[in-house]
Image 1 (cartoon, chains in turn cyan, orange):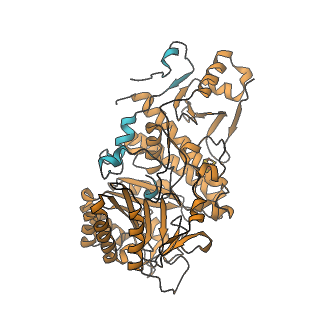
Image 2 (cartoon, rainbow over the protein chains, first blue to last red):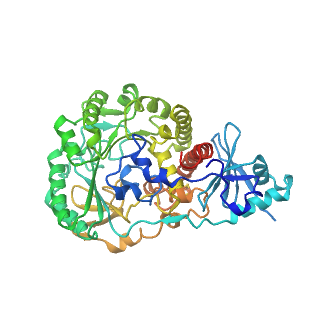
Image 3 (cartoon, rainbow over the protein chains, first blue to last red):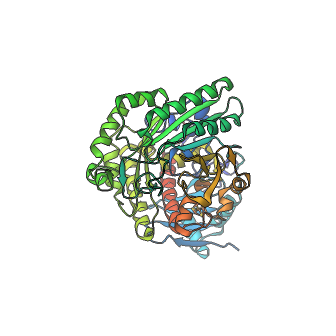
Length: 62
Length: 447
Ligand code: SF4
């Protein structure tokens, strides 16, 4: 759904700020996506939300 | 009355304007991209919003009203990414010696962290096993635990790595603990047998390599003085044979005063099928000069990667993958890393530290043998955003409060922020947000 404006009750009013839609499916699977990210060890790993910022080494990131 | 603040970041080709929770980024192709620092929402903004942020007297009231409305909005779907309770990662100096002599080495140039001639080249295996078991015992049944092998060069002692892994598995199996093994290596010692061992561990392998031989060999030399590229790339080829059975195969290139050619390194490294490419920065005394160059180089790499392969190619670079995961996952970050909260480092002699870069830093010891200093560890408990006084920094819920190691190195106080760190971090995040906007705006959900 392209160009979707999220605050639906205001859809007709909103003209200047068009929010893009986050894609949780990509967050969950990005690291599993062919070679686009680090392969996950288990299904539990795939779904884990990020707890940390942008650390120096991969070991600090989950 | 609206209080609108516009500013340009020093030394960077980056135009930002800000009002409270809202950041506007003017992209090089003239788009205006918005980021909500609390909701983690990204938006395409009308040029008039930019004007509103720079000079509110110039725009109509309905533009200002929309800015104010978004500013005040709270998205209930956004959660707070909190660190789990207790130590979940144990990083271990298997060796405090190295077969290489890198010019910028964080471990004293020879893996010893400055303790040359000490008797601690090899880890005290029995002591370590007891420490590891103590920490594994604290993980709830079925929980996850990571063991991270670093050095010096950990593959100087492959049998030790195997022995640790065997012991961890034996200890973890009855309680169904999920183990993950990680290793950072220069790859020069990887034999087919070692590659097989790492595959058997389903290890997450990170190879330290800076780029093409002509760059890499300048600063990453073997102890003999010869460049390390030929051996490292041979090791990489051996790891590629087992890549499908590894947790992941990543490379980590380090930039800094010794090298700011991020583009050249990436051009070389991207030819290999790494699962992830880390392009990191080693802080130093001349960061005012080199840090902006690095950030600009990484921005150029991001532009090229996106041009070549869109989101997938961009997300082979760790910082951008991480950003996309945070934004898509709608999870506010409160900690840059887990140091002292979920992560401990143990050196070859059995001393604990919160961060793996503090080996041999006496003041940062947080325990020894089977004793952890509770009081010292409690000081790491609050979020890093709080501890490092990040206040209302727009990047705080992506950055997570910055790096205590870099702070300590650059300001002498692990909780006093380093301006150069903040500048380059915000630059990278702002650039990443631009590509996130482009990816999600143009392709929409479900693409
Ligand atoms: S960029 Fe600096 S001020 Fe902002 S969250 Fe990170 S460390 Fe804190």
